[in-house]
Each structure stands twice: as C-alpha cells, then as structure tokens.
Amino acid sequence: MATANGNIDLGQRAMLSHLALSAWTPGRNDKAGRDIIVAAQGSSPAYHKAVKCLIDPGVLCDVTAAQGKVRAAHYRYTLPWLDNGARILPVALLMRYEDEVGAARREFEAAVSDFVWVKYPAAMRRAEYEQGAAYDPAAYPSQESLARKFASKVTYLPIPQADDFRVDLDGPTVAAIKSQCQDDMMTAARTVTQNCIVRIQDVVGKMVEGLSAYNGDDRVTGKRGPQKGDFKGTLVTNIADLIDVLPGLNITDDATVRDAINAMRELVRADHTALKADPTLRKDVRNEAQAILDRMAGYMGEAA
Image 1 (cartoon, rainbow, N blue to C red):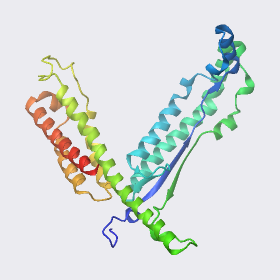
Image 2 (cartoon, rainbow, N blue to C red):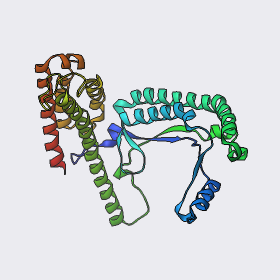
Image 3 (cartoon, rainbow, N blue to C red):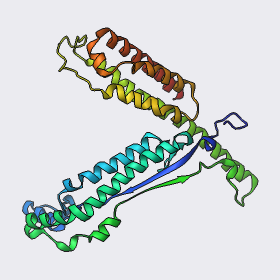
Image 4 (cartoon, rainbow, N blue to C red):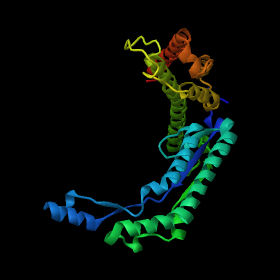
C-alpha cells in the first residue's frame, strides 16, 4: 500500500522484530596471571592483560552453534532498520519467521539446558584438576545463576508513522519532526531495496566466481582436474534459498528486484553436478549470472 504522496507505507507491509540473545562466557580477567607476566618481564601493568577461562570453552560449542542458528534465522527473514537493533520483518514472512526462529530458539534452549545441568558440573571438575593452584571455586556461578545468564527473546513492534507523532509542542516544531520521520521512512525503504540487492550480489557473485574458477575444462589458469577450483552444491542451493525468501523481503515491490528473482530462477535449472559435467551449460549459466551482477551494479550506482 502506498501513501497519498506515492511513498511506500512500510507500516502496512511490515513490523519491527527485535531479537535479544544473551549467553555466559567463561573468560575472566586474571590479575594474578597478569602480575606474573609483569614481574617476569619487568614491565608496567598498564601494558598487559591476562584472561583465564573458568572451563574449557569447547564445552560451550553446542550452545554457540545453536545461538548462531537463531541469529541466522532472524537475519534470513528480516531487513535493516535504522541503528537501534530492531529489524524490519515483512508481514508476508511472519509465520515462516516464527516457525524457523522459534525452532532455532528451542534448539538453543535445549543446548543451554544440557550445558548447565550436565556438562557444566563435569567441566568444573575437570578445571579443578587441570588448573591446579589457579582454580578458584568462588569464581564459578551456581547452576541456577548460570541458567539465568542465557536468554533469547523476540519482541515485535509497529513501524512508527509520522502521523502517530502527537506531543504538546508548537505547530512548526511538530511539522519539522513529522517531516524528519517521513524522510526516515524513505531512507528505510531505500535501505530495504539495497539490502535485497546486496543479497543478490552475494550469492550470484559467488556463482560467477565458482563457475569461472572451475578447472574441469579451465579457461583461466590452463590447469585441468576437477580437484582444482571445485565448488559445492551450495553454489546453487544458496541462490534457490534466496529466491524462496526474496519476494517476501521485497516489501517496496521494487521492479529491479522482481526482475532479478525471475532471472535467478534460470541459474538454478541445473544442480552443481550437472554444471560440472557440462562445459556449455556451465558457461551459459556463468554468463547469465554475470549479466545479473551487471544490472545490479547499475542499480547500486544509481542509488548512490
């Protein structure tokens, strides 16, 4: 839906989603360790910092991986919004966002539970054995306290509109603030489209690089052999994944983005195995991908 002046009304097409993730980290400043270094080197304490890990950081790998999945799902379905941490979530993608982010958050919570109640006690016992005199039991939080240091929360907010700004100020001041709000909306709309373009450039650019460097019948280095410049199936599937979500992200209904989506569908007509086996197909797809990049470069030049 567009406003009376022809601008896109983001508030009708999207909302704001704020993801808050927190986690405990085992690193602690080690003053005693720093003092040992300072004494050994005859240096000033101002130039040294020592950090001690309370437990082996590897014990947290499942939690860290699950946390990364939550962030990845959040970013997959959202777009930049100003600088306050919240991101634009298109209404068309809300259900998919809740499904994928929700599943990732449950995985994070399960990993946290396993760490706190199973792995942490064992990691403490190992630290006591391996740290020797450096082990300080008072530095370790209880399991109950530790559990509270991990959290994931999603908050939804409406996109603010200039007409919603109502405060007790004189007319010219309110008008100026509303004008600034409208300018911010226009900037946000441009940023949305530019983010879509950047995502296209990323995955399509990697396809151009991968197909150009492949040495099944290499035209770049003159070397041969599929082990040189090899590429994986993600070269194609990453584009397919973007095609899947991009129509929903294109909340400004930008024609350049729409055209790029249609053009990218041709890039995924064959999987990576077929691309490796057929030099002609590989060349055609590579040229089509490069043509998309050329059009995107022209758009970004105009936007700048």
